[in-house]
Image (cartoon, rainbow, N blue to C red; front, side, top):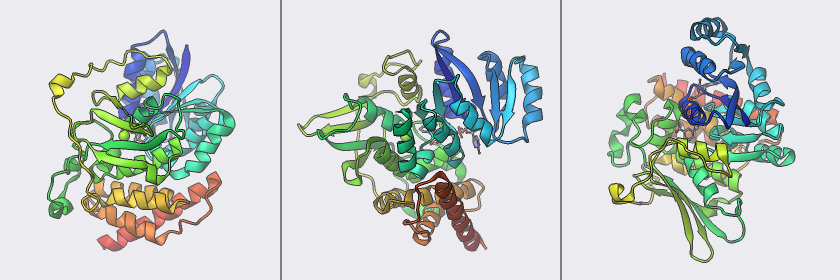
Length: 391
Ligand code: NAD
Ligand code: MG
């Protein structure tokens, strides 16, 4: 029996995780669930999975959750709140594995707490790794934490590494990208894209922030940085290919001319089930792949002029140091402003580029305090740029 804490349980990844767990009551027990919104859902899940602890990031919703737990009949669930509580359920002795599925920088401290406690870390929260790459990977190594990637591309790469790691035989990692909803749209019209259009992803149902990131391809950029830290591959060994069907989730090429790929229907329950059960295989509820039904798979090179956010992520990785963290912070500020209709779609790349240009990539980032300070400063720079651009 594996005991889990699921952080970000009310989100898209959190709900898919619970769907897999629901199929295997003999294998998994849930110790804690966290969520910020959708309090009713959180309470119903606590009742269904007999969860001892429900965690809120802030105190504001505690009363609402008490009422919702009562209504759902979750009499055994205790409520904790605050950042310390999130870190506690990610690192406590009772827990074997942590699903890190909070979106954005808010997930960094609990994900790091799980790494420092040597847990099995099921990492969906790519922003945490982008912000603190070296620090996070060192925390895993020093404490024996095993990171199992949930991002479908990185999970695919992991599955295409029979030795479990990149060695001298590997020549290239290819991350596939759907190209999002605007792959064919006239770039001159991107300024008028609405949040509704941007979150309407052709192949995946995801949270709003990652859906916008997919539309700008910043998501793929963050994934290139994520792949660099997870697999220790330099920028030159990483490639992005647009593959609109999202059937090949990524590939690893070897010195002898072999390229291994992992294929499957685009459904996050596959990488989640893989990571939960690794090295075993369990049922995920995902329909089997039918290549005959799909009939064709297409590929093209990404157009960096159409997707400047992808170029910015390559640039941030080239600069190294604090640059990926700065880029992530600027992007979070810009995407939030876009979703609030305070910034145009093409303004996201502009705010990111300007923030990156104004923040020093050479700032020290070897401690968690330094990482958080870089994030805070970059958010302030991005917010000022935003205010200046809308006033
Ligand atoms: P989502 O918006 O659907 O869910 C986010 C979860 O985090 C929710 O439970 C929400 O309540 C919680 N949350 C939000 N802000 C918080 C805060 N400040 N403090 C604490 N909790 C907070 O997002 P998602 O699509 O499930 O994505 C989660 C993470 O997984 C992201 O990092 C994303 O990049 C990554 N990811 C998602 C997918 C996908 O298919 N959805 C695929 C790959 C990677
Ligand atoms: Mg992905």
